Amino acid sequence: MPNIIKAQTEEQFNDIGAGIIASLLQSNPKALLGLATGSTPVGVYKRLVELFNEGSVSFAQAQSYNLDEYVGLPADHPESYRRFMDDKLFSLVDILPENTHVPPGSDPDPQQAAAEYTKLLERAGRIDLQILGVGHNGHIGFNEPGEELEGFTHVVTLDESTRKANARFFNSIDEVPVQAITMGIASILHAKQILLMARGADKAEIIARALQGPVTTECPASLLQTHPNVIVLVDQEAGRLI
Ligand code: GLP
Image (cartoon, rainbow, N blue to C red; front, side, top):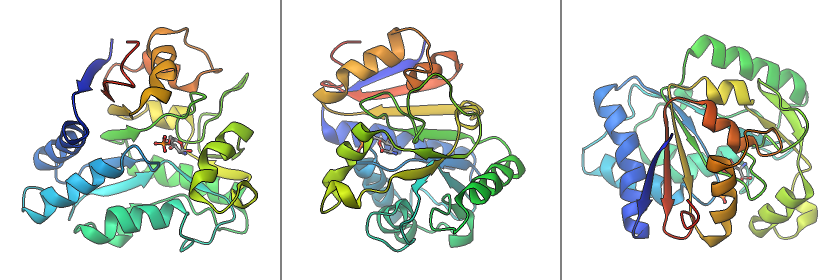
């Protein structure tokens, strides 16, 4: 059973999420962090930046590996995940740019770029803490539901529902990339510890399916049930059914 934490307020949610990451860095300054984008971790990263500014945490020796990236957006595109991470965390703390890794979605050969990211992860060793959000369809990273899931970093075609959900960040759905590079399920499950975060009433159903439903590739987040060290951080709304 995962350790489930239900935050009472947004502030508490962000405090707890940032606290988990900060404690790891305090006990293991060289930690390998698996990082996620999306709206869910934004407040957590903001709180982490505050902790850094207060002198409570340092990323100087840490390494980060992000879960996923859109294919075809230049790295400095406002909606690329590289830009998201630079703007919301990396440029605001003391992590060394060369220690931050995001799958290179603008590489002209995304398949090759994905294979190289797998090698990079293998060389890095086990991620100490993998941060995850969850899509409404149960995707983690960009591992979309289906009959099969891939283990390692690969190129995916995004579900229409995912493109619609993410269209809010673009001018129109036509601008949302069709493909992405994502870490695979085996790489995610290889992490020593996983922190799954979800907020809002629209995530209640998928959180219940992920944690209490059958373990199935049709709900990639349900595979987290097979991991021995998962913390689930939800707000009251997302945790309503668990
Ligand atoms: C996105 C990302 C995921 C993220 C999820 C939820 O498409 N690829 O890594 O966890 O969808 O996003 P949000 O936190 O905005 O709900």
